[in-house]
Image (tube, rainbow, N blue to C red; front, side):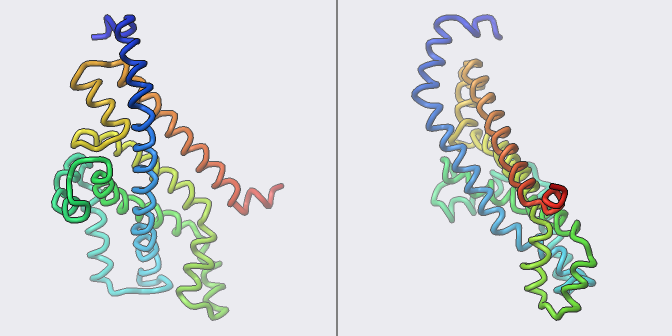
Length: 236
């Protein structure tokens, strides 16, 4: 399998692919990951807030049947493996984008797979907020919207940033799998050359670049979380 992995012919061909195809694939992976995570946050953040604020003892109680439906939908979407989900949402993808193949088309299943995950992460972050702070805001006459926007979200910001980092690295992993159905990026490079054409050196390079991207996203997220953490500022 790896007998000729570093033969002159293989290295020459790999260099050609690395120069001509990988840079654009890297850009595709980057912008698809960022866009999909952004849209997942736009959908998942309000849902995560509702999961906490909408409880019986929350700041904005909503009917129990609505909460039950919301939880069931989120749990159902989270339980479907991404490869299967991509196929299941083909009609939605075609309706929104006009096609089910390509880099742009892969954003739709990525968002659908990621926003329930983001909602649960947001829920977890908001539950870390000290209830005494919320009670103090309520006693001062703050409205539910003010409590959510000015108390709950700011107080949980470091945790939200850390969980967003988890979300973006998860989406990055999903982008690699989207190459199976024609999605672009490094996943397509790895699958087309490593799986279909047995060019394992190309696949290895694609995997290494993906690992580096994960490290970059993780480092930036960790740094931002530390910068926004009031507890760490108080120790300085």
